[in-house]
Image (cartoon, rainbow, N blue to C red; front, side, top):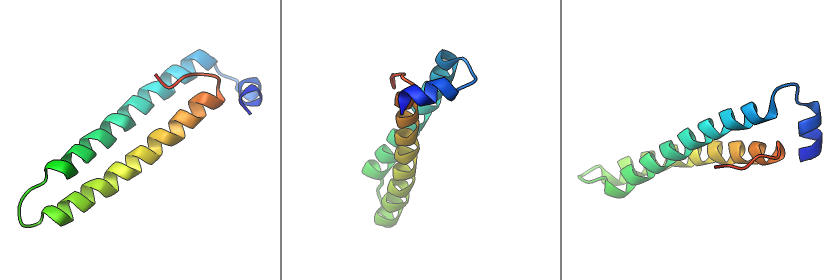
Length: 79
């Protein structure tokens, strides 16, 4: 799959992988921030707040996973 993705890509592969890595880092950081929020939530609504944070954390992790897969398809590495 990665060879075909590189062949059909009409852009500079290194630039594309670099941009995808920036997006990957942002998604990973967003995941981590939401995850931390879920861990430190306090108060009467802690359970609801933590659940909301974890929902968002999981969405961000899904985005990061998709970006990492695309980076690998383009023969790059998720840095």
